[in-house]
Structures are given as C-alpha cells and as structure tokens.
Amino acid sequence: MDADELLKRYCAGERNFTQVSLHSTNLSEVCLAGINLDRANLAQSSLSQANLRGANLIEANLSAASLWRTDLSGATLIWANLKRANLIRATLTKVDLHKASLAKADLRLANLRDADLSGADLTGADLRYANLSGAFLAGANLNGANLTGADLSKADLSYTNLAKALLFKTNLSYVDFTEVDLTKVDLRYCLLNKEALPQRDLVEAG
Image (cartoon, rainbow, N blue to C red; front, side, top):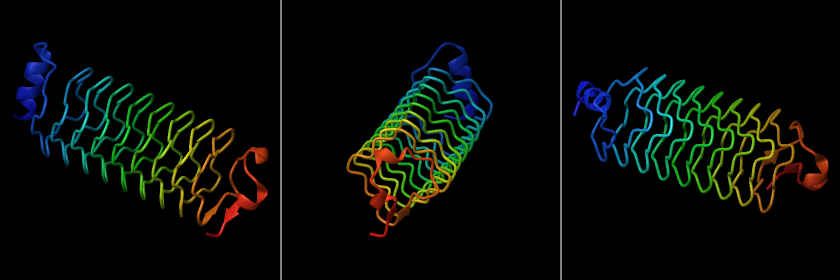
C-alpha cells in the first residue's frame, strides 16, 4: 500500500490498517486522527506535522521515522519501536508508551506531559528541554539520557534507571525517587525540593 491509497481509504471512512507496510512513506502534514496502525511498518517514514491524535500504534515499527512536530496526543504506542526516531517538538501528551523502545530517539522540546512511559527504553535518548511533567516513568530505562533543561516535576521515577544520565537545570521538584538508580548522576544543578532526596544522593559517584 502506498500513501495515496491509504489517504483515499481513510478519507472514505476506513480506519483499520492493521499490519500495513508503509516503509519509507511520506505522510507529512496529513490528518490521520483515530487511525488504527496496529503493528504497522512505518520505519523511516516521514510523518512530520501529521495529526495522529488518538491513533492506535501498538507494536508499530517507527524506527528512524520523522515525527517532527507531529501531534500524537492521546495515542497508544504500547511496545512500539521508536528507536532513533525524530520526535523534536512532537506533542505526546497523555500518550501510552508503556514498554515502548525510544533508544537514542530525539525528543528535544517534545511535550510528554502526563504520558505513560512505564517500562519504556529511553537509553541514550535526547530529552533536552522536553516537558515530562506528571509523566509516569516507573521502571523506565533512562541510562545515558540527556535531560538538560527538561521538566520532570511531579513525575513518577520510581524504580527508574537514571545511571549516567545528564541532568543540568532539570526540574525535579516533587518527583518520586523510590529505588531510582542514580549511579554517576550529578543533581547539584537541578531544581529539587531537597527534602525529597538525602543530601548524600545529590552526587552519586557509583
């Protein structure tokens, strides 16, 4: 299936495109709100500035896809593959990314407010200046992630792996630090309500 056929069928009212192959397809700036792309192959596709609000992308392959400024608010991306995807300035509010793979994804300035990232793999992800306020990150892997300037206020980081993550001017106010791995993490330059974390943990040499 190519982009033209997909859009024609979508405009005719069809929404179910389970397991469709759209590898390297250009779907930039199109409206696909509420579409079902469960287990679809969208690897290396361009979906920049597309409207995918409320879309079903469970187990979809979006590796190395371009999702710059894409609106994915309320979408379901459980177990989705977003490795090395470009999600700069993407809208991901209240998205379900449970167990998704976002290793080395570019999420600079992305809006992940109230997103479910529990158990997600964010190893080496670029989250500079991203909005993660209120996000559910329990059990997520943020090893080596760059969180410079990110807002994680009121986020749940319980049982999260933050080893070797870069946190500079990161907002960590009212964060749940239960059983967080802070190996080789420097929190001295973060916004942090000090009573939430013992002083000895502000610099963790590991």
